[in-house]
Image 1 (cartoon, rainbow, N blue to C red):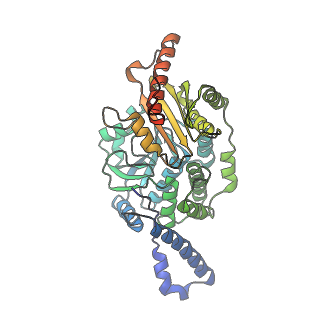
Image 2: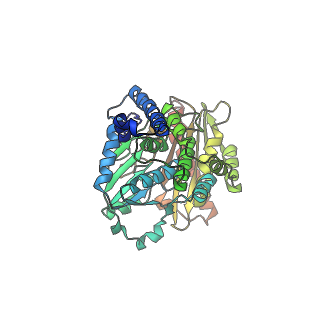
Image 3: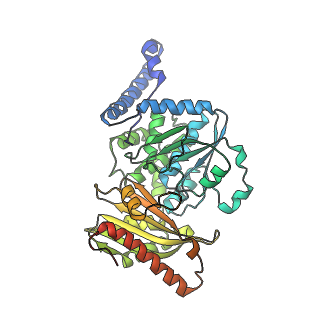
Length: 419
């Protein structure tokens, strides 16, 4: 589905045409500035190929929220949420509050990236971890709807529980390619948009929420959105016009010092160890760098994408894939987690990973992605655990390491498949 920035809908601008005489000079100047800003977004959207009118999406979301006034919704983000997911979910929560909708933002995994931990702590971002072991005590009957932000239910362990509880999917807002057909009431998928934070910021610009610099929660959310936008556009180096317009709007509200504090959080020693392992184990073929890093603790999972970010900066490398076996001792669960980063404009991470790893028995893709980045997750199942047996653990890693390399290299060098 093509990217469609939202054409703002601001009823106050319509009223201003007939009531300008009653406005002060300052108020008229504010309205004029707002109108010019929104006009630029509208002009941008007219240049983009689209099948759905951007302003129609805003109207649809507004009507959906109106239908669910005074309800309680579960806002689910991926198990290992990134700044884009965290900030976008918070923005949705603030918009929903305008309709007296109470939202609980939850994730089943953990925050392991140092910047994500700092973001949540410093902004007091209202996201809660729902560990699978605690879910038996959760009362799902209090929720009338489920909202998926920056995901489509394929990267969260909570989705099967939500479906078993019979909670309908009310809203999906995401910038990844279409993954599953959940048939929500409202869906806004934009695979060509760089960040979900851009979409939510455009909702603000369209009038779904008027940000106020005097409201500390608004300032912190704007700061989080700026971080999410920067994070998913590689510090704006891969940003498009719509991202710059969104960043320009957020610049009026965000706290630069707070964002600086989030960005200056230091890498842990364990993350540095994983990057060192990736450097040591990498294989470079046709400008692809592929590295297995062995076993990792569940809490260190975010070291994998950080290692991929580092490897893709090597000279003569345009794409890096890093993977490892992540062991969750609490759940007695093992999964292969991998991340892809690329600077090659003609390489689609979503298509590449889907073709490389295919689907599981239920039809769910093991991997997927967005512009310049992607990831995959493969459950080990029957072969899991027994890591106290050193020889068994070594053999298991060798098998998975070889299998993943084989699947990747058959696309990288189809005429010379790794054997």
